[in-house]
Image (cartoon, rainbow, N blue to C red; front, side):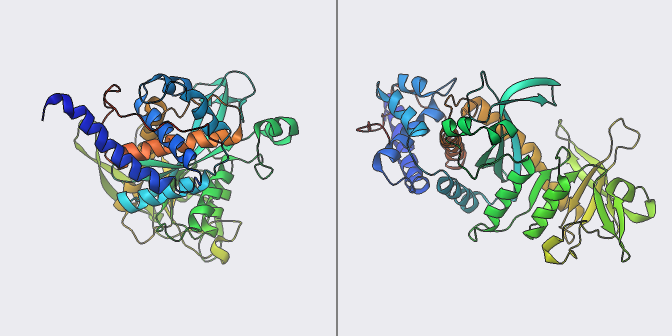
Length: 401
């Protein structure tokens, strides 16, 4: 085989893989032209460098010259439902990559102007500056190799909750209201719990900046979900047969109440480092709202101290009371993995690039970025082939509707 035929062969192999993926994931799109535009948009997200907009995608040799309008219509005007597609993505990841945890991450999407759906001004705690942005919450399945995005929600502030005209222009459904991030997390948990084909795995969350960490913990408990949640030292728990209200920080101050453990952690240089972990000797219960209907479920408290160092101790509450401390703390690696995935989604898959103004359009674009990430990493797709050698997709006969 000559070297000139290699790119064409690679493109043909990718075309077969992508077609298989599309037939499975986008089966809920009931119109053939919708599925064809999904294929074109997916290829654009994967192959186009720089900002992922319909115009830039249409300029490449992967798409017909007049495809920009069709791509725009597919995302912003076509009435396809995104939730069934996301459920299929989650099922495909669960069936192929042996996920070990659910986790979530916030995404701040900088915006100019005030017309993009959900845009508002808020304080960026990382920089201390006020930014004009959209605020999203992503749902991810963590596996040994990647953290896969399988769900997105948009956080609306009070202005978007009460301004009926803005809501109508952006086509925001009546049921979509102003809610804190924790409420979106619990919506994800309820949806996952209702899907019997998804095997139960722990939820690994960072609740240290949550406005209602106790409410999130109680909501997860109502669904009888296993958790490994990092909390603030002031998080309240209940201990003892005679109920006593304590903070996790106060609980771990008593030396007789904690058990020492040592886990191994890899340093940046690849060396193994011994890390001390304290575990509460007994179990605690969650306060207030009755967990699982009877409030009797036991949880374990773990502490990562910083002896002699400048950093404060860190605390986790977990329902995995029958697992070794090393196993529980190993699940926390999903938090670093999800940060890496969010960075990749920003740099390579256009998660920040939606320029439309509608609620359905935003969800369509975010669903497509998730599909592109899952396809590229799960199907073992090679890197972008030369655009001049890639076989273009069949041109849809009309704009998606």
